[in-house]
Structure formats: C-alpha cells, structure tokens
Image 1 (cartoon, rainbow, N blue to C red):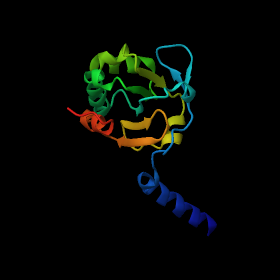
Image 2: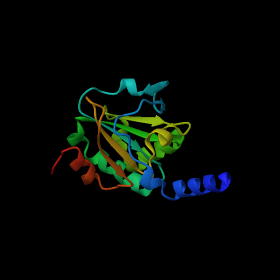
Image 3: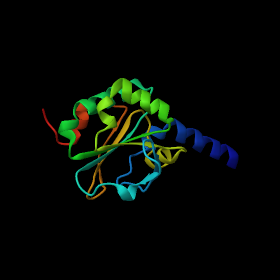
Image 4: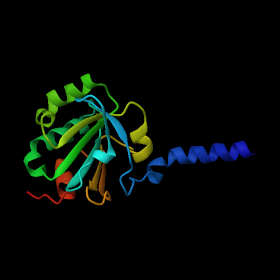
Length: 164
C-alpha cells in the first residue's frame, strides 16, 4: 500500500510539475564553466547594480534563437543589464548559435556564455521551457520576472523597464 501511495504521489508530481515549479525568488548560488574563458564563473562574480538576466537556452531551439537575436539587436538599450547565457551544450553548438543568430553577443561586455555540465541549473531554477529567462535586481538579488518559453524580446524589454 505504501508503494502505491508513493507511485501516485510521484505520478501527480510529474504530471503537475509545471504548476509546482516556481522561479526562485532570490538568486541561488551557482558555479558554471565559462565557454570562452578558462575557468569557472560563480554567482559571487555577478554585478551589484543594474539587472541580471540568466538565459537558460538550447542553441538549436527556434525560440531561443529568436530571443538571442532580439537581445543582440537591442544591446544599446541593454547597457544596464548583464546577460548570462547558460547552456548544457558544447562550445561548438554555442558558436553556431552565435554565428547564425546573434553575432553581436560574442564581443558584448555585458554578455557571458556559461556551460552547465550537469543538471545544476535545472535543479536550482526549475525551468519548464526553452528559453527560460530569469531577471534579477543585481543589488538585492530578488527576482523581477521570469519569462518561460518566450521569444519576444519586447516582453523582456518591458520587464526591464525599457520602452520604445
């Protein structure tokens, strides 16, 4: 009987997981590999002012490609925002994503590409779609907004208080 209850609970959890999953209200600590520099990048290196956007993406995802291109096209409006593109894909796929969809991101001073070699991001942030963008206030590390599966850069701009 105990097994049956456990089985029912697990089934319900996975069936309704998107309902239970919520973006962390405060920015969790993390450590990821840097894609274009040797070494690790951890949450202690995040800026203390402006906005922090963590973009969990897949280089082959059409919505991710559209959002990446939109961010690249609006970099001049996004000077007060630090972007961290986090993928579980190898560097060659990240290179393809940048070269095909968002060339301006590679040399932008407010953009970093990070590699999650395990499941750390999924475990800490609980994304349910690609891309999954988490916007935090850099000073307080409090969540401003979570955009899940969104490809319209205008919704990101609006969340950051940028108009026109």
